[in-house]
Amino acid sequence: MKKLIAISVMLALVTGAVFAQMSFGGHFGIKSTIIGDTAGEGDIVAGINMQAARMNVDFANESGTAGGRVRLYANQPSGPTAPWWGQLPFAYAWFKPAPNIRIQVGHNPDGDLGAAQLTGWGMIQEAQDYVAVDQDAGDGMGSYWQRGRRSGFYPGFSAAGFIVQFMNLFEGFTLNVVLPMSSGAGRDQGNIDIAKVYTNFHLNAVYAVPDIGVARLSFQGLGGLDPDTAKSPGDIFASFFLNQAIENNSFDIGIRYGIPWENGENAKGETIMVYPGMDVGLGYNIQAGKFAFRARIGTFFGATNTSGGFEPTTIGLVVKPMYSEGNWVFHFNAGFGIRLPASDNEAHGITEFDFYINPYCTRSFGNLTFYGGIKLGSPNLQADEPTIKWAIPIGFGCHF
Image 1: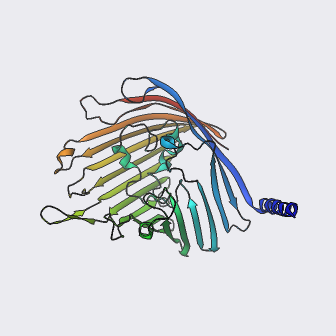
Image 2 (image 1 turned 180 degrees about the vertical axis):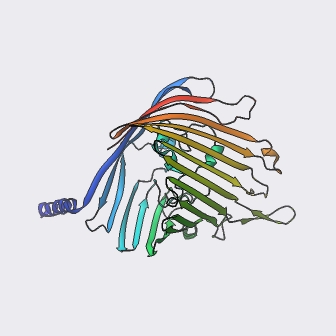
Image 3 (image 1 turned 60 degrees about the vertical axis):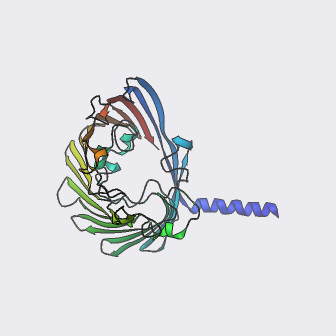
């Protein structure tokens, strides 16, 4: 009897594999610092880092009503070298109970529904893993220029939970409801108080304007709807992506408004209102034959801290001209940031600057891409003795 059961289970598994639509793909990458002073302290270094060694398993049924992805890693480190999303598995599934309804459950660290089309990951892409300076490159060349990345745009959802999509409710309109099922940034799992879950919900409305672009309006809950939590109720985002009205040109604008909240009373018995401030972001892209130009700028202003004092204003600008010749692409990636002191905050009494200059090139060999470049920058340009960091990196990335 046990053999019959085992055979039945095996047949079921084989049959499932035969009729399921499965695909396998992956990514392998290496970054090497040929020479550099990556700490800005005069210590010359060189080295190598394994940037990626992973495989994706994508699956779907024949009718296209259910599917998902599981990402497998050759090495899943822990501690300080763990992936940025923590130790949760990279795995999610989706299904469509009706033609216009799609439900996704699980954990997709790559993110869904993000509104930034020109100012986010897509501006630099995978080059930041090898030779390009960007927010997630870990170069330590400052943070104010990073204000240009995604400022003002709904960030989407990359935590653990549910996404319910009501697609094409009317021509070009989709409504997305996000339910993070964990606390904080959603990088944990397990049961917690219900108020800490549902007060972090998202609403995201997307409308495709024919022959012009895409408009988005979003709300991201931050927990403050829980009366026992002293936080902002959430952020409101509005953005528009102009990508069809002008040939070879695209333009992205986004605004974030943080809803104020009360944080007790000061020594005079006055209510302290905390204002999370506003972000405004702009992105631009133009393509002219072999030449292209991308730029992004963002600013954060109007915020107060939990004591009622004003926070500094920050502005970030990044530009990237590009030139293509055959399989070669040459990039000039450069950024500049500034923090303006708050007039009533003595701790932030000076104007601070950071910058970087980062020319690099890419060369494709089929599925493999070679990267080579130069990094030069400073996180504290205004200092009497500014820290200057530099490196000559190369990299190899292969998708299969």
